[in-house]
Image (cartoon, rainbow, N blue to C red; front, side, top):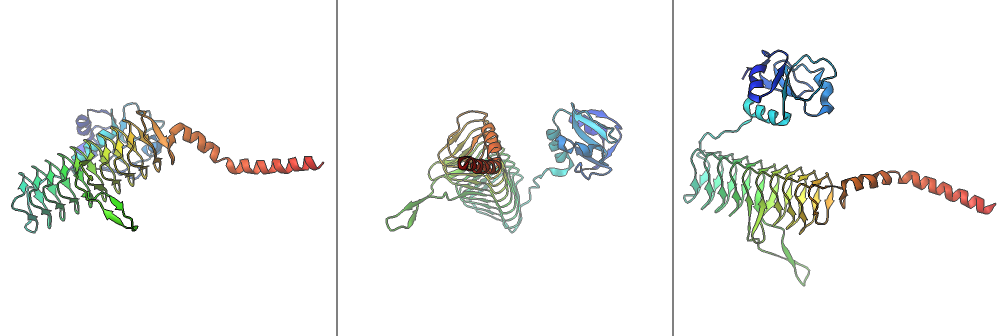
Length: 345
């Protein structure tokens, strides 16, 4: 697809600076984009590339003030990231259902399959399961007994949705995500062994949830493990039984949530952060990467850092002191030597 800068500016409701007839064929990174490519500048750490890039068009915010001349055509927009997301869809980022079902897939006779559902090779839909209209099921996906999949869902290769689990409309599950594996429940016995506790609940993903590759969400012991509407989970995340992730909360890779932890709405969780079980996190809380949350957080919109986590600014002050400890120890030893010398005199 080849379009002009003027056409893109109109689509994005932006303001154009430079040549409106500049031709764009594809997107590219600002560091190495070439002629015919459109790139973007949203983080000013990359501003230097705006002056050297060979890209034909750059998306920038309306308040961006260049420090040097820029030879590319600029399109000024209110929200750079939102505009980039829109353009990537326009340049072929969308996955669309073709309504084709592979002859090597298996659908149980009692399963209900909506209109325009696509199903790849060796996909399996078990007894009593339901799949909504327009859903795309890639090869080797497994949908268990009585599971319910909404409309316009995308299930990438290798996704496993176990029995009785629910996936809402417009969800996206990336390769090898597992929804509804058993919760980690074992009862210690007198002889030192462990007896497995039956996990009788399910997992519910509400609408517009995205789950990254190799993320696992365990079914509840009783009731439901719930990922609420609009939540976005990165790759390699572990959500344990009966946990709850709030609406529009975003979680980076390798984070872990122990059983019955409750995370509020619109939270931002950094990579490798960990949450102990049976705690509650208020709405809007921000947790820095690799932090360990070991208690309930009641203050909405607060920021936390460290393990065990402290309020963000407290952690920074503590770390500033901590990194000076080696020098402080040297000075203390020197003072001890001087004090001993004085006492000797």
